[in-house]
Image (cartoon, rainbow, N blue to C red; front, side, top):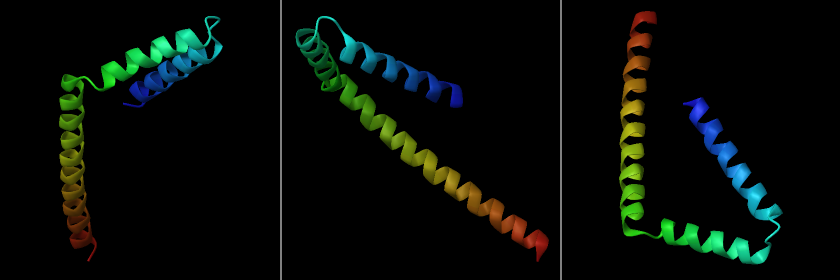
Length: 79
């Protein structure tokens, strides 16, 4: 998981470095910005974002429940 986060971070940094340092300047920036905005606002991408958010919330709830069970079990062993 940490490798994936690092990879995404590097891609973002590379993208920003390219956009900010592009010789084409503002025209290229606007072209990239328009492409990113059209992708981000695509209905399929919006659905995927909503599904990912729901999935993340569910995973967080499941992890919280598992941690609570483990804490109770550990406290019973100690007490």
